[in-house]
Every structure is written in C-alpha cells, then in structure tokens.
Amino acid sequence: MGFSQALSGLNAAATNLDVVSNNIANSQTVGFKGSSVQFADVYTGALAGQGTRVSAVLQDFSSGTLESTGRELDLGINGSGFFRFTQGGEVLYSRNGQLTLTSDGYLENAQGARLTGFPAGVDVGGQPEELQVPAGAMPAVATTEVEASFNLDATVDIIDRTTTPFDLADADSYSYANTGTVYDSLGVQHTMTTYFTKTADNTWEVRVAVDGVEDTANVGQLLFNNNGTLDVAASTFPTYAFTPGGGADPLNFTVTFDDSTQFGNDFSLDSLNQNGNAAGALVGISFDEDGNIIGNYANEQSQVLGTVALVNFRNPEGLSPAGDNAWMESGSSGQPLLGLAGTGQFGTLLSGTVEASNVDLTQELVDLIVAQRNYQANTQTIKIQDEVLQSAVNLR
Image (cartoon, rainbow, N blue to C red):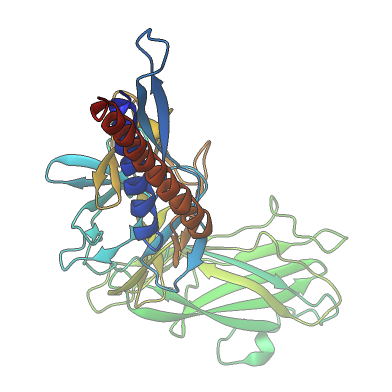
C-alpha cells in the first residue's frame, strides 16, 4: 500500500510549514535572511516512486530594505558583505548592525558578540581584532604649520620702509593685518597676527606676531607675477619662532601662502588652516561610509579610531546558521574573504540605518496556504489508502 509515500509527503510538508512559519516569525528581525525548501523524489527502481524528501533548506541572502533609525550606532551594509563578530572564542558573521557601546569601549550586538576590525593605522592585511574605542582624551598638539590664502589689493599705496619702519602699534606702517589661532605644546591657544606691507609693485613684506610679540628675526616676502598669481619659488616663507612660556616648548611654525593672489579687489581671507589643537575629551563616535570609526572630541577635532572589517564568501548559501541572526563558516561556504567597506566587492556602510528582513510577508502568506493544502492533500492520501485497505479486509 502507499502509506509510505503519503507519510513522506506529510514529513516534507511539515518541514515546509516549519520553514515558512520561521520566515513569517522573523519578518521583523533586522538582518534576517529567509529560507526555502527544496524537495526531491524518492525512487528505488519500482514502477511507482517511494515518495518525497527534503533535499535542502536553501537560504536567501538577497539584501533587505535599508531603513533609517537615526541612531549613530546602527549600521547597514549597502551591498555585499557581512559584519565579523567574535563571541566565546568563535567567529560569527551577521548582517545585523545594531550595536551598543559597552562601558569599556567595545562595540557589541544584543547577544554580546563583539564587532571586529582594524585599529587605527593598521591596514586590511592585518588580523582583525575586537574594536575598542579608547576613552582617553585627544592630546594637545603644537602648531607646526599654518596654510593661508589671501587676496592682497594691488591698488593700495606702497609703504617706504626707509621712511616708515614697521611698528605693531602703528597701523600706518603696514597695509593689512589678519588674526588667526595657534597652539603650543600644552594646547594653550595663542593669537597669531599676520601683517602685510606693500613695499614695491608686486612685492609684499610679511611679518608675524604671537600674542602681540613680533618675531623680528624672520620676515617673509611675497612676490607676485604680472597676472596676479603668487611666484611661490621666488617668495620666502620663514619659520617663525616664539617662546609661549607657562612651561610649554618653544613654538615654531611656518606660514605658507601658496594660493594667495594680488588682484585689484579688496583684501580678503580665502582660507586659513593650522595643524595644532588643544586637548579634548571624547564626546561621541560616528561612522563614515568606508567603515571608519570617527572619534569626535570636545576641542572640535576628530580622528579615525579604527575601521570596521567586512567579510564575504564565495558561496554565502553554504554558511551554517548559528542562531541569533548569525552564521558560521562551513566547508560549503568557503573561506572568509576580508576587506573594507566601499572597496572591491564590498558594499558601503550607512550609519543610522539597519537592514530589514528580506522576507516578503505577502509571498510567505501565499506559500503558507500552499504548504497547508499540500499537507492536507497528503492526509487525504492516507485516508484513501486506509479506505482501500479496509475494503480489502472486508472481503468475504
């Protein structure tokens, strides 16, 4: 009789119902990947087949919808790749980027698995390690270079140095002045004033004072071409030296004016940048699309604290489910391929975003009805087989 065929159909249909139900249950699970059942017939050489069996439960690793959360520690991968986590000595892979920052600076998911990557200054060739955000403040950095760009008015009068010597207190002894900020080795802020004096056609004298004290030993000279552009090679940008006091090291920095011009327009500052900063406590972190962890400090500075590592596999469908919305490497998946977001085959990272489940709830509800009908049809087969058997038993 055909009870074995119907029983195999019931078992296969029950597995299909389990898979569809699991997909529906996880339709709101961040980073979840749905599965589908593949069936195969059982044939042993008899005229009639021996039923069916579940040949595989196939995982669907297509991307889910990226949803904005507005939370800085939520990460979504826009493209291919997995986050790499470690927990209990095991390496796990997930598309769920819902992270929290622990009291000791580690980035963890809800299950306590720690996100891995590369510390600042370490390239992708190194071994990924658990990322830890340092709690220390950014140290003070003394200014060593100032990059400035000005337009100097070509129509101003020439000042004759033989009759009008330079004097900080005399505004008639220079053409223009502009202030900026420099920092000493202790992070103390000092006011830097740059004085420009037109001493001849296309020729400007440059002097620098810090906190009202001029460095008389170093005087720069800007020479401009006839078209108003700066002749950088012929100009001089000396290193200015000051002693700030208060226990700080002597302050030495160079002011460069590479992109400055001399046109018949008003004096104007186009840009002014310096490389020093005061000390500052860490006030928060953020992520850029390349996976860099950016530390933001109270001194309005920022720096890269590490980089998130992404992983891909030649056959993601071969990954072994580990629960808690994570997978593990298997022989079928192949070895993990490490990389960085936005390079090669890896997608970019989006902060304040999570990847929703890729389950199509409407399709799953349809599949549930089909699976239910399949199960009912197999029970009907058993019922018919039972009636046939009962008829045979009742023969006289």
